[in-house]
Amino acid sequence: MTVDPRLSINQATITNADLTTALRVTAAARIPAIGLWREPVHEVGLATAAAMLADSGLRFTTHCRGGFFTMPEGPVRRASIDDNLVAIEETAALAAAGAPGSTAILVLVAGGLPKGSRDIGGARERVRDAIGELAPHAAAAGVTLAIEPLHPMYATDRCVVSTLGQALDIAADFDPDVVGATVDTFHVFWDPDVLDSIARAGREGRIATYQVCDWKTPLPADVLLGRHYPGDGVIDIGALTRAVVATGYDRDIEVEIFNADIWARPADEVVARVVEGFAQTVLPWLRSAVDSRA
Amino acid sequence: MTVDPRLSINQATITNADLTTALRVTAAARIPAIGLWREPVHEVGLATAAAMLADSGLRFTTHCRGGFFTMPEGPVRRASIDDNLVAIEETAALAAAGAPGSTAILVLVAGGLPKGSRDIGGARERVRDAIGELAPHAAAAGVTLAIEPLHPMYATDRCVVSTLGQALDIAADFDPDVVGATVDTFHVFWDPDVLDSIARAGREGRIATYQVCDWKTPLPADVLLGRHYPGDGVIDIGALTRAVVATGYDRDIEVEIFNADIWARPADEVVARVVEGFAQTVLPWLRSAVDSRA
Image 1: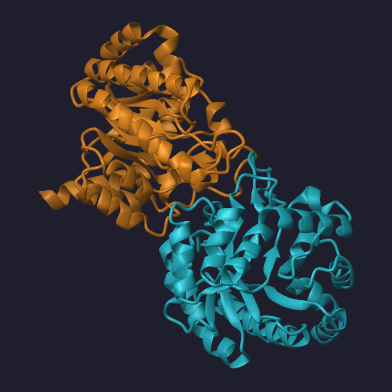
Image 2: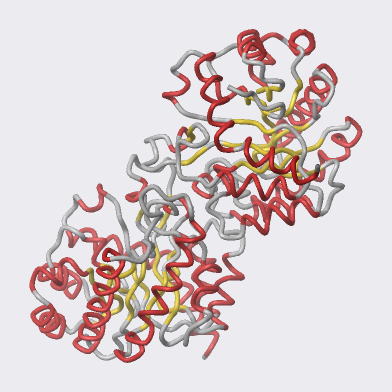
């Protein structure tokens, strides 16, 4: 099986593996890059995590995740902003520790409606305000904040940013090196405007990271876990990948899957299946893009 | 409890009631209007259903539902188009049988991806084509086809029309009296563009029918059944109602709820709870709209 030189495993895909295991399994599969989650980094401590990452020889692609700042002003919001400032520093440290070509990207999931609130417009304004507070710190640290629009079924309990166009509208106030967007096939494929929004994101220099996984129905009882190996569902991952590649996007591409059945399998098996799905659904479009530039 | 003179019970809300019971319970609650579903109408036959509706003294608001025409050309598609032609005739007959002020509206749910397909763009084009085939027949029958955008979580298995803006783009090719849109709070509230899209729908004369119910998380295991009484969830129904009323919308407003727990309750109890929820969440904005015109 060919491993694409741009494939990155997002650690959530093998969420039961600790950092040691995640790095080992990824490197063993000759996958060149990994996106990390904060919790397993915290388990060993940032300095140790950075050293382990450096030893692995892997590139670092994203840190997952910051955000969750839709609440009104007060101590809880301050705690969230402070925690995001820590996440920015972690992102910079890990990107510096990763192999050359690592990217200092912090994925931001906005958060849902505060408890008892029906004011989704207000929550969205507070997302913009929070990013405005964080942006100077991200710029100083050389970190890009990557606003991730999540599928609208998560709009009230997890992420009030629901479309790529909306993420770009928020990002528009900021330097593209400091605030960009996460494009995840699972979250955006349904959008009638998605191809136009990807093209716009490219023109505006906002595609910080591109992530792939697939969608199937029926959804599982916990709709958060309805993500599948690329190719196992109904998303036209080729069409979305072509659109992203057409913008000139040349970074690593993460596979991020939340799925209880996949999480129950051994990490090395999961990583092998990711390589296979990526080879079928993403790799052909990367090669033709290279060919067309040749 | 005040019953608003514009409240309509969509029959799906009391889905276990047969037509006799649905009409009786609705009239007994002094609700002036009802939206019907095809299956219970077919159970008694169209002529009998029309006579029963006439006897009830209720207005008829919508017929639910046509659509499901995303499949490629062939016998299955032809059968769907033929069935939609029957639904158009049913709609005209029922609207004629209802009390004065009845509206001849056929709600259209587009359908999902054909089995084995990943081509959501192609499916969407076939929706447009189907409506183009049906429109002359709807015009001849005096029926409005009301394209219903469904929440994006249903995009692949139920309805490839996912936003009000997309529905309006499809409708734009047709006379507004013949092709309009269904605005349902549950399906559109999450959309960052929803208020603009409602205003546009009003300007373009496309709001065929307005339906309300509420959204709560976590979603139930069957996400189709996650609809709640107005006021029991997190949708700002007031904001959406104000936007709809501001366009000049002056028709009846349906409450349509799919919820296994609500369906398990007696129909008269459900209808009483609908009246209550409507009075709290919708009625205030209708009154102030009347006041502002006074």
